[in-house]
Structures are given as structure tokens and as C-alpha cells.
Image (cartoon, rainbow, N blue to C red; front, side, top):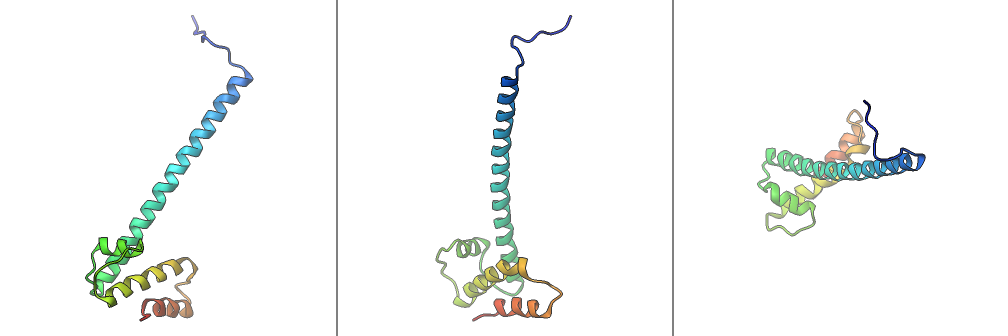
Length: 114
């Protein structure tokens, strides 16, 4: 004996199912995109903090995040400037060719701005 559903599958029902599926896909993609942006920002904060810590910068990861988010941080001016310069260099990343001396010099100059 085969199952007989309590409804009729019609072109209208198929279109409604397709619309629902499309909306779910859009919603899921939006969530994934937001999660990716948050992860990218968290990675940028960790990268900047770790890179500067190696060079002796004593700011915490939270302080680096606060600077990135435009908040005021009470710390030595030089260390705050190092974070701001690293942010600028990070923003240049996609445009730089690591095998081009001029791009390397630009990155270095950006990091060393007073």
C-alpha cells in the first residue's frame, strides 16, 4: 500500500516551496556573512595585537580592539600610534604585492609613521 498525501502537489505548491527555500537560503547566507565579518575583525585584532606585542607594545587585546573601534584608550601615545599604523597597514594588505620592493617600503613607511 502506498502513501497518499493529504494534499495535491500543484505548480503553485512547488513555487511556494521554491520561494520558501530561496528565502531560507538568503537568510542563512546573511548569517554566514555576518559571522565571517565578525571572525575577520577578531582575527585582525589578534593579528595586530600579537604583531605589536612581539615588538614590545604592552597594550592588551581589548585596548587594541578599543582603538580599532574608535574608543579612547589611556596608554602611551607611541603605543597607540603603533596600533593606528598597524590598522592602516592592515587596510593596505589586499593592494600590496609582497614581492614588490616599493610595496614593502610602503608597508614599512605606514607602520613607522610618527
